[in-house]
Length: 97
Image (tube, rainbow, N blue to C red; front, top):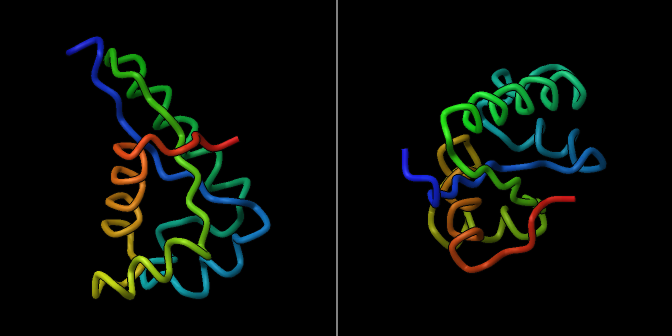
């Protein structure tokens, strides 16, 4: 693996969790609670880092994501959310807190 490769991981806000579950057509894959999702996402980050990738959590603010999806003609599914995170990372976005 390229030690300089960066991978952005969409990181959601706990205060927006219910809204995300309401608008995401694939909400069943997010997990029933924020803490359940956070546990799985943290494990995925650990696995990627063990593969030698530099992983950066990218803040996905739904007030930015939803208009972005509308402009691009996308639904806010996992593919769109990940694309949004990758574009934000490429533009030098602030990492998630």
